[in-house]
Amino acid sequence: MLATVQRRLMMNASPAGLPVLGPVERKVTYRLYPSKTVREELFRTRWVHCFLWNLALEERRRAWKEEKRSIGFAEQCRWLTELRSCSALLSSINAQSAQVTLKRLDLAFQAFFRRIRQGEKPGFPRFKHPGRFSGFGFKQHEGDWRLIARERSAHLKLRLSGIGEIPIRGKARTPGEPRTCEIFLSGGRWHASVTMRCRPAREHGCGAEAFDLGTERFLTSARLEPGKSEPVVFEVANPRHLRKALKKLRKLGRTISRKMEAAIRKHGKRKGFRISKRLRKQYELLARMHAKVANVRKDFLHKQSAAMVRRSGLLITEELEPKRMTASARGSQKKPGKRVRQKAGLNREMLDASFGAFGAMVGYKAEEAGIGYLEAQARTLKPSQRCHRCGGVVEKTLGDRWHECACGASCHRDENSALGLLDWGLAKWEKDHGFAFPGPKVDGNGKEWTGTDPCVEREALAGWNLAAGWKSGAMHTPVKLTAGKRETPSQSR
Image (cartoon, rainbow, N blue to C red; front, side, top):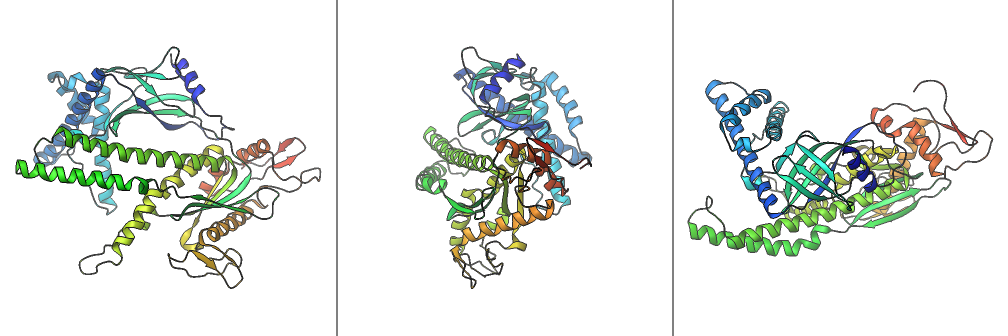
């Protein structure tokens, strides 16, 4: 059965290039289509797991308060075994699945103590409301849960212990071995996040490309093709997913706020009362709208990052700090901030553009393809301030969108940044490898080689394993391309 599922996953996978990574774990999200009975069972199971979380958290708090004793994961697993023997509610869910919930609580406490050691805001684990509980998980494939191939259908079925079989839809880009499964509710719809152990690989091009992210333009890229002397600059417009839906979201949020205030006046208290079905439907509609915006944004980021890796052999950008960039300008009572509303609007646009998520996507896709991915230190290089032609620093404010230099360079601010990053990345490549990207211009027979053959270039880059080497700071041995074959020096790398 597992072989059948893996063959079905292979049919859904995209074409991939030469594998350059060892076995890694990747998440694949499927959407569930449960029947009414199964849907009720999913909600009930989630409620029991939430009850177990709160019960285990209370047990840890009690042990420390009364006995000054810290409880670990192994001890709580033994405690769970005793509870299941005398509780029909806890014994109704899968035992391994219940241990996953206890493990999540243990990880929450580990993160709590880590934040204390590092001097951060502690964030003690909280009791959770069933409506805000994320979901539950299963450990062993073919035991607690199973993916089943459906006859005359390209999609699969998911069998969950104690719940039943559920039709699912989704695609795994890379075939692999199913390991664990997480069931969660998002936007009023049930999903399964399956962990696959696989060997991902991607196709890629040969050129060098540097890109700068922004809010006016989502992306400005400077691309240098092999054999060309001048880069080509192009831009990708900012789709502004949140701004397009902001009017509807604000209107719905005001409706919910008005109805909630009316319910508070009716019951005479701010919490602990049942809300009406109409108000609950409004909350569900708001969640679905936010989920739709997030899904559209994620789809856009995946497509842009995949296209960039597919056409490039070297990617260059600047290292950004989204948390620091989107900090509030509110200040304090003694020192109030300035232009707080303007900064809040800018923060919303930067978070909508998702600089951090896009950088992470480009990074792991480049690693799967076996190509180089360089990040320049923005505070040192200053790509937005430094002229790409002469290297001089031209101070600009955030409102200055055009670059003008005494050397005669005149272009958009983002274009100047992309061109400067491209020069920096190519210089770093030549310094690390001893020759200009994409490789030696002359082969062993004295003929000019421009590196335009994607297959040859892919083999060369996979042989160097550039992504892994740059992360570790190791030097690489260049590959010498001769007539129809690839040769490397005999010394070890």
